[in-house]
Length: 212
Image 1 (cartoon, rainbow, N blue to C red):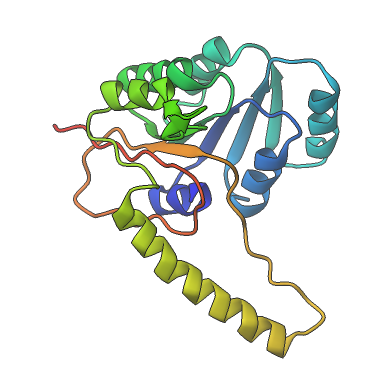
Image 2: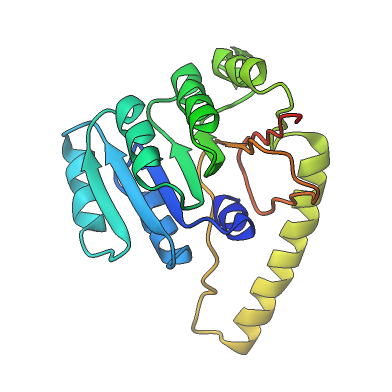
């Protein structure tokens, strides 16, 4: 979903906060080769060291050390006026919502924001993180919305058919298809006439289009 959306919006720069082992960073680098990926990580632990090593040879990735709450807005300002996406996987919840809302308000070139882990339920109770996103972005839609899930099912069938076709024609190869990870939210700050059709996601996604 993230890759699809960034391609649709012509994103030139992605600012990622919360790199950990670099799985998302490597995916962004591979499938958005024309974009520059700024990846921020605050921690200095085993996962962070694995992530740095994993991303060291990625030519379109720039690694940063620091707190995403401060580094993301700073980087967003520095990359202007390039079309920019923000991906928050740390901090999470209300803090991530605030970061993206702040960037939307301050920087017109920030086109889209993604937030991981916006599940409907948190330990069996309604998620306060999701409530914070809905409160800040009242036009939000999530990927566990039944209508989006119905579209996802149709896309999944098509992908399975493609996969089987490739396997039959190239039995020794596995098709190189990007996979989504955990729970994501997607925020689009500006009204657009066309309808975004996100596909192939397993995660909760927020789509925000504030009224003009």
